Amino acid sequence: MYINKALIVFCLCLGLTQQSVCAQIVDTHGMLFQFNNDSTASVVRVLNVKRCGIPPCVEWNGIGYVVNCIGTNAFYCRYSVQNVYIPETVIRISPNAFFQCTSLQHIYMECSEPPVCDDNAFADIDFRRCVLHVPSGSLQRYKNSEAWSRFRKIKEYKKK
Image 1 (cartoon, rainbow, N blue to C red):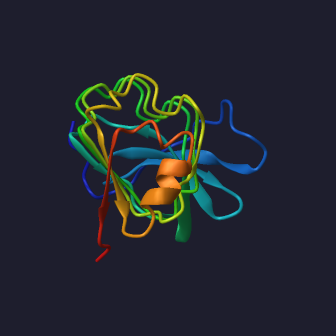
Image 2: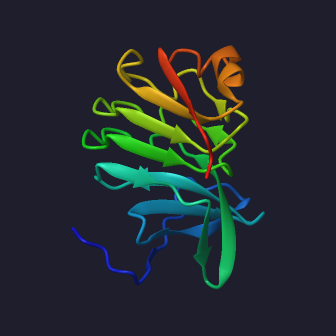
Image 3: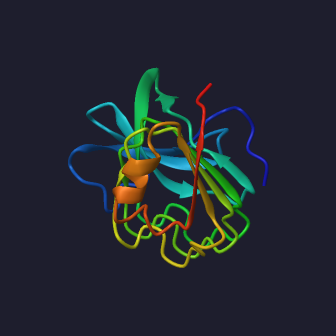
């Protein structure tokens, strides 16, 4: 299903905390976002795509929100996802965020500091095959992080 540039708004109040706004949207990035009162947003669901570039910020109702979290089960069973681009604004990756993303081949991190990651955030990922790309100068920080050190192939790249 193709989603045009217009925003489609869904009110999905079930399970949201008091600190979150009672709305989630699907936008041109092919993702559902939860918007919080502190002007942050979390990716709560990703549609089936091969490449997924999480934006550093999204706008809703004329307000800009910084995307700082990949939520629980955001990529759950997204078998077609092969490449994910994570912006430097993401500071947390929740439990089972990438659960059963068995086709994932590359994760491109813009974060120099490894985001806080639950132990099972990458459940069922083939850590021998999936390549983690990190900014120059941050390789050792990722290798020293318990959650990120599971990746057997960690490569540095120069930020643009």
